[in-house]
Amino acid sequence: MTADQPRADRSPSSDGVLVLAGTPIGDLADAPPRLAAELERADVIAAEDTRRLRRLTQGLGVHTTGRVLSYFEGNESARTPELVEALEAGRRVLLVTDAGMPSVSDPGYRLVAAAVEKDLRVTAVPGPSAVLTALALSGLPVDRFCFEGFLPRKAGERLGRLREVEGERRTLVYFEAPHRLDDTLAAMAEVFGADRRAAVCRELTKTYEEVKRGGLGALAAWAAEGVRGEITIVVEGAPAAGPADLDDEELVRRVRVREEAGERRKEAIAAVAAEAGVPKREVFDAVVAAKNAAQKMP
Image (cartoon, rainbow, N blue to C red; front, side, top):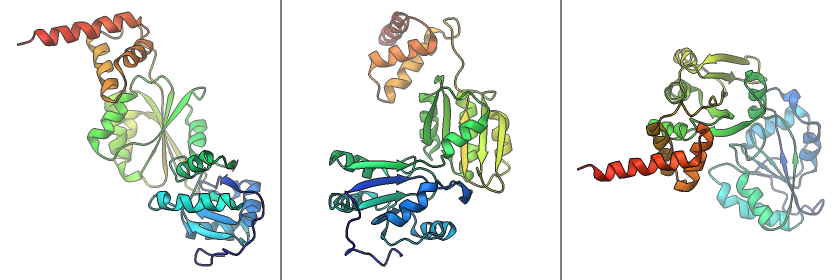
């Protein structure tokens, strides 16, 4: 069944439920066992790319009978109400993206939020994740981490986003396009330091899988020669800072960065104090002193 062959007359197979299904990030053999069954069972299949869905079903030997709809960034807002209506009518709606789990830097969040708002059932078929796969292969700490998605394309905005997390102690995970990898790694080296450990994971689970580990400076130089494929970057978290490591000027600068990013001053001061390992009062006093000094300037 293809996208231009809707089955509007099909009777609902169950009470309405939204199924988020993970798909392989490279190797088709990694498809979750339940994926084939859900593809065959679905009344409606919302796919990020219907052509890739067709290749997936052919590779799995699956025959779908449900209605297939495209659901991607360009039509996500417009198509969400239609899918919610299908759920309310008792349809089983399956959401798949090109690779990995829906909603993780892919379409899905709007539909899940809309379904939850209507108190409709949402479940998932767990599957491969580039975030967790790269994290596990990186050789960096995995006990605490945060996923930052794609960085902004513009250089200034990219640097600003990186500066927001320069003191982050948890391991950081990013997605990036191959043609922007060298610029991104260079920006990371500038903000985090050239020696900060990182891993660039390329073409995970595919034939030419590669994990390049090293300092950000060295990785930026390597990437300048050109890199292809799907990219996930894992960056070591910031080292613990002691009171002697950060002077008042740096404390004030970090508070200012957080305020410019939208945090209230009170929360920014508390966060910087936690990062630096100093009392909140010390950071507060530094901010007040800097403000008073600025007011006295001619």
